[in-house]
Image (cartoon, rainbow, N blue to C red; front, side):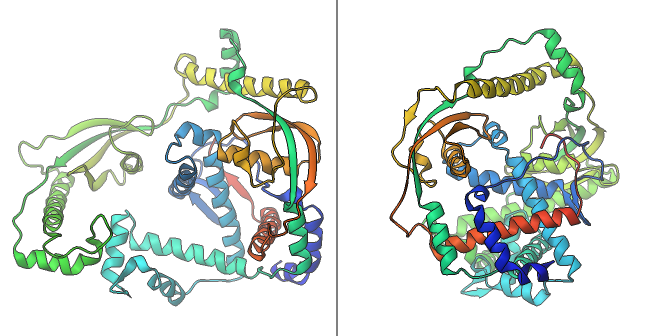
Length: 488
């Protein structure tokens, strides 16, 4: 397939450019509803490659942080759901798995030498300008990563890059000019934003029960587990000067002040003592862990009880996730730091998810009803009003000027303009991921004289995106995609 695409790349590019605008920002649709946990904890399987819940969580966290920067740290989970971040995170993993299947079929690999050349070039692992294995291990530990996890992830990323590199190509003048013309269009529009809050609904009990009856699989309790745990309180030690100096020599690259400069041994002394205290506490916690596993806790050490679920937990999300992964074969969790303490957790009982009764699910049923019904009403309102509405008018704007669309967040404005410039309709309405609907009327259109809008890198990136889309569609037909999670 790669050979074919390379051989016919010239003709493929011509075909792609015929519908330049239509493909900009194109996404992927969802895959419907599936049962959860059917395949031993995997959330999806693509060809021969399984996608785990841990990988989905990492992908989601990365995507959430990227959006959160756009929102200046104010993004919450509700907004993340509205933007479909979990679906996007899963889509990214599916795309990666498709390429990895292709790499596997062609026998492509990343050698240990290739991996190490990349790792050794990363400045975060350097000490005095040179890669240092101790700094490498300590940095990964501080970021809650094992060396094995990090290197497996790096190999996967490098293999994807190597595979896609086979399809890379340059940019010619015709393509650059075509891209400049495509992006050089500016529209003056009239628009009006319709939001779900404009719709008022009062569902009856009968309507809610009917909806609950049709979607009972959607309304389940969260799996929970009953656990016992013991706590190791902080220990205070009095380290010798030799121990302090040895710790400093081993970790000096990590001992920095607020200004980012390396601290001297004296400046770092209090931090070193705190670290040595923590190390001694962790060591004692490991002894406590062994005693707990053997059923030989000392007199006076009484485990505390807790019920933990993803929706309700006294522990932070990362620790909660680890606790929820315990099972009968692995009922103990090694010492984990909570504040200044260390805790050791033991699984007592796992409570699987079950279907909710109507009364238990009522709040969720109402939310589903309101969400579905409001979307339908908004679509109906937009359909009946888009030809006659009176709204705000913009100056001439390009697809990049999302900040000029008042009333929308930056991601919403970008999504709206992408879909607007992809549309062939002078008047119409556009539904956003957030649920808002924008009615629009293109009043005027002009071609900008500034041809600097598209540099070579932009064109190359866009060509790559289009080629990736064609590749992914081909791979999806070759490697079946199975999704095991609901509601994404």
